[in-house]
Every structure is written in structure tokens, then in C-alpha cells.
Length: 272
Image (cartoon, rainbow, N blue to C red; front, side):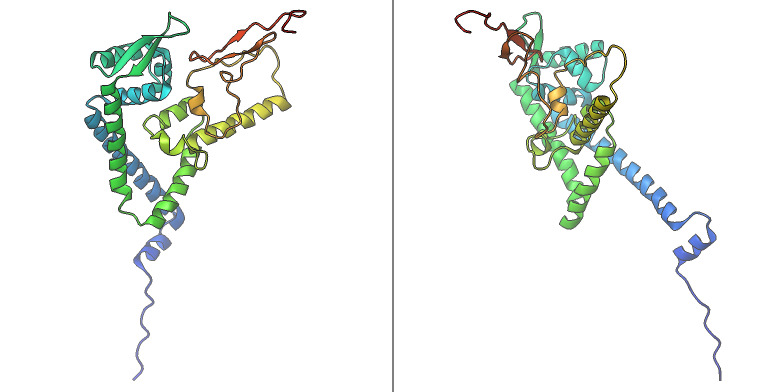
């Protein structure tokens, strides 16, 4: 007796894609976009909640404490630039942090008209607690993955973060909660966001050298946050370290971001 041939069976996902006008690769891209966006939202909310609970203040105040701890004498205007808020909002935030005993103000040793912000002992302890809470929240999530997967995830995130920054403000925004001892204090594995911004600035500078702009060009304003945008090992010269003027010797580095040049010896004098 001759048996009838069995019908050809294909996997369910293959049959669906055969009837669908959207290719399988595109459907997977849509799913990846949806899953990654959901992960970013949930992880962001979890990190903000953990850090705020550990520091006992708002997420914006946590970011302000971290910037004050990194800047070593930032002004209120520098803090407003780093957080991307208005000057009145930054003034109110600094006043609340001072009232809570987390930040203190001191006169600048170089310009007594300027006030510099510093962390108190309590502010430093709260900042450290927030950083540890952030690390624990992310560590609990990535700890479920095998170590080879985590290595691949590092390379993927480095590429993605480099594509997400297109301005210095974006770098400040991305790195506001980071532990800089991991990626900013070493030149072996630099910050991908700062490295991408440095490469973009270098390419734009070369483009201006090839075709210089016409007319009068205003020099960029030196910001106290500029050193935080340059990764370790970069060749970009810091004007506070080696300042020069037309007639004079290199001046002393100052915390204001602009060094004062000392007048050089006059011609014909004993100093030659």
C-alpha cells in the first residue's frame, strides 16, 4: 500500500514572514527598538530612584553634588551650564544645597568677587552613597548575563554612546552621573562620549584650517567645564597650564580658567 506524502511543514515564524510584506530583518529591528527603549526608560527610572533615595535629595540635586565634587571650585554659572538649567534655577538649587549643609561657598583666592562651590563632608558622603547606589542598580541587572556577553555589551555600548553625543552639552548630559574613576582617570579605556566629541572637534578644526571662514571670527569662550570634555591622553592643550601672551612669560594656573601672564623683562635690563 502506497502512503500519501506528508505535507511540507515550515516553522510558524517563517510562515508568518512569508505572508508578511515586511522582511524578517526589519521586524527584528522594530522589536529591538521597542525593547531597547523600554529598557532605557526602566533603567533610567530605577537609577534615578536609587540615587535620589541614597542621597536624600532630588535627582537634579544629586547631579549638582557630583559636578561640584568634580569641578573643585565651580561657580554657579558653571553649574548651570553643566546641568543645562537657567541661572535663576541654579541659584535656587545652590541655595537649597547650602541650606541642607551639602555645599559651602568660599571666596575665590584670585578674584574676591567670585564665589566658589565646594562639597561639605556631608555632601561628599551623600554623593558617594548615590554613586554606589547607581552601581548596585546597574550591577544587579547586568550580573544576570554571562561574562562573555558582558564584554560584548561593553563594545556595543561604547559605539552607541559615541553616536549619541553631538555637542559639548550632550557630553555633560550623558556623563553627569558617571563614576569618572572608571573612564575619565585612565587613558587605557577612555570615555567613549568624550572621545567621540574630541574626534569631532579635531575634524572640524582641520576642516576650518583647510577652508578658513570669511569675516571676523569670535574666539570660543573658555569654560571651566572644558577640561571635563577632554578624555585622558588627548593632545589638546589646556591654556591654563601653558598660557602665553605677546610679551611676557607663562603665568600661574588659576581656577578661573584664564591665567594671568606676568610681564616679561624689558629689553636691556639685567634679566636680558
